[in-house]
Length: 451
Image 1 (cartoon, rainbow, N blue to C red):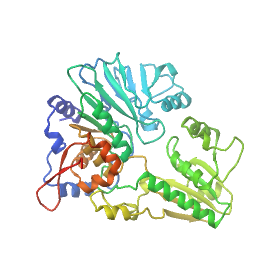
Image 2: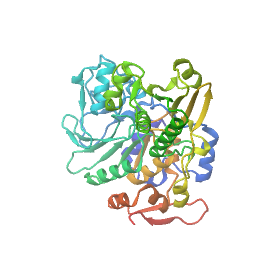
Image 3: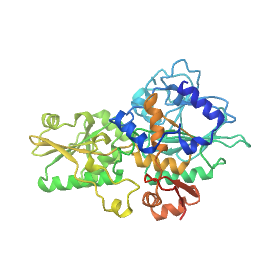
Image 4: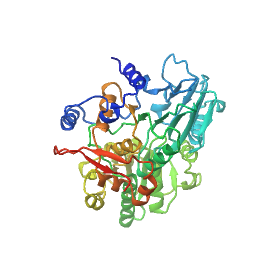
């Protein structure tokens, strides 16, 4: 059966077994993990899915018009209501200056970027304030945006039914990094809805496969590692030139960390980069036009030892190439199932480096996508009845959902992920009990997540 047809069938049946078992039964978690490790050597995929079925939001009770999320490439779509979760090329693909199909709902930052960089008529763009639910009478639903902890302007979207007697809640993560503060924010919002629980979760599964391989250091830990490198390099050479690799939009927090560590404002490599950083809210971290400083914002692909030595001059040139793809074994923190003391004692090691002449490039395992552990924790917290992967295509999406569903969490992992203060705030909205599977064949343990 075509996967899209199966998804629609599952939604119609609202099969509660999905919650416990994921997509289908697997003989054992260990055999499932082994199979995935044999068939996948990297993350699910770094690009948003081209499968059109995972881009539609339809069938919400009372909904009068279908919605396409990041779905500008869907051919022949009879759609006049779109959501753009953020300004990355795999999500804006198919969106051109001539867009006139209807309206696009997005954040204010994304609206400004679309108008500036693509040239879409501002009348076609409807910017929603973060955290403020808006009833869309013309669509028959309520929609709320939450900061996705991804790139500037990226949002997680909550879709709610406005039918008085048929509560429904769907969550579309777009691309996101599910740090503990975002999970706490989401569970708090979910508790305020009429549905009180998530039916459908459209999930960014970039780092779901192979299971448990892509455990990334937290964003805050990697930012501190970058600052430490900056201070050490300045101690060795006070005239060190720092070049920070960036996406068109993305990695701004790395630039900000370097600015803070050096006390020097950044010089964009060109006027386009300056405009992008300003639109993304980082104008105050930039040096005045025409000024040159020891910190440069440049395209990520330019950050190679040989490339830096060819373009920039100086006695010591330091480049930062920050990407989750650069994860080494020693960069991998203990799993959430490890003892809390083990996790607390772990520190991010010095990033890998490569040198050519007077230029050195540090590869930092920093990502703005959720690590595997974070995906599992987020899913356990929001308790969806159905998960739809939005990354990769075909079987890869199917297995990514299985990978998240087949990992269950321990009490100590909950305590580590949620600091005490956040646990208390989230106690009323996290599930009261959770069944924790263990690999040693013992009986599942029912634990209380509110303690």
